Image (tube, rainbow, N blue to C red):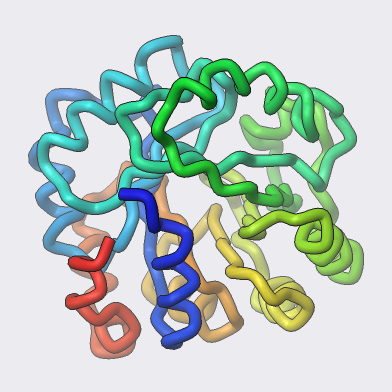
Length: 256
């Protein structure tokens, strides 16, 4: 599975919207893997992201190995640290926290990961990661010791995203944070999307069908949902509606 990014580009060019279910190894009960992943397989999800800000060493590899037993969907690492890199996954979002100024999360951690990545078969996807203020402190903010960009400073957010693209990032990820009080606003999504020629990911604080539809309508190409599924797995059923199903042709899943 070495064409994940190209398939994302193809989906975007076809006007198809993508959905990633985010699994945090630190919060996910291993004995629930088969049941949960079966629900993911039956849903409109197109990708599975695995990662978190604070995860014990080897925990990621264990959960990814278990997930792969029950799905053909691409499993993509969304790592908070190099200890979360495992060759059991299909791809890695090579995240650079371009909203912050901590050199460790701009380039330092990436350098530390090279010896691991050179020995892996992971598809590495350079991703500009932008943390946006959501009304409370997030784990990302605490761990990286960086401040999110204020929600009201839309111009700075959009310019940061464009700078990431010009630096060579292949994806831009707007992140409100796990359990966010406020999700990324439609204004932010629209302004950022209008500046970019690369796919846009949006995550954090999306807990309803209306928020999901709004994110897509505003320009998000791929939406990431984690907490909503962690707290209530019936959310899989809630987002099954005509609009969402139209943007997720089931035949596309088989091409990943």
